[in-house]
Length: 167
Length: 196
Image (tube, rainbow over all chains, first blue to last red; front, side, top):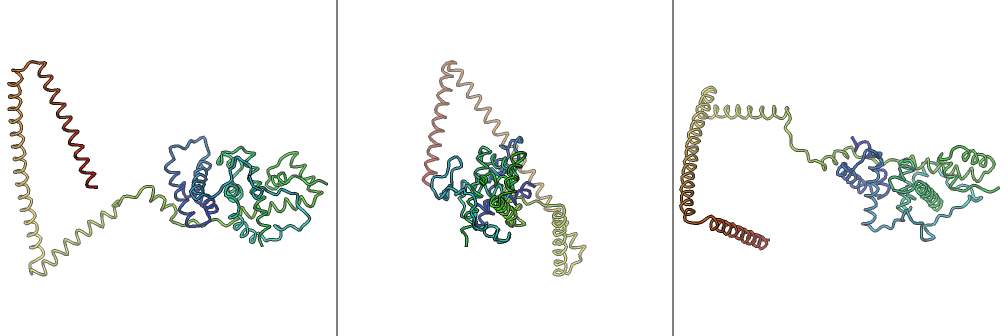
């Protein structure tokens, strides 16, 4: 019952974090096994989905650590210029995002997501792909609400920039 | 005209702003094309992200997880029991039929013969069981006599020794048993390591 209810959001999240479908399926299964093994530690005062997604998030972070993928720390500001977001007021050029039809835009987003730093990608996927609220997101990542909002904003702006760079 | 902060526009495009903050942004948007475009771009991006195709979940996804959680023990259902019983009866009838064909005897004759054969075997098994029980009782009887003899000897021995000496002797015996046990277990573990 729990599996059927949450399999889609978990797979959507894990799939977009690891990229490969088969790997995502294996990981998602492992996430549910972890959830089952940790059921005793669940406290009913917390939302079950948030607790489950937190386990999924930790699982993916462990994977990054093992693979030694560089992930931005959520507590510290980005170090290099590459990580900094060019937050500017839109210029006079015609809108690039507007040029694409929604379908084409989806394809480009999938590609651009792969280039997004994992820690930002994670937040973007939780918020805008899986549709979680900022409150849930902040709880999953154990961040202050304002930081969570700011990070999602950064992810969105970086994604937009990556979309504009695509041919 | 100064354009609005992008973070604010982003929050507005997500519907996060309310009350006077929202009204202020809307007032600005009414007169600023750049900011309107910025909001529209972000709305499109969010809409596209929200409608990304979901990863296809295989139909056996949950089953695979459940199988890993608890490997299902092979359980015989009512239907299974009935099938097994039916198979047994069919096998018996087929064997009898084959025997009738080979020997030329009647079906009822064969059935009676089988009955007799089974009954004889049950009788034989029963007589063997009675014998085995008798032997077991005999062994217990002998063991009881031996233990009585041992207790008698022990009483004779202890009548010559004082209570203090008895305690010392018991302690010594316990120490010897304990040391012997340790030495034996060590030897056993060393042998096991060698085997590895």
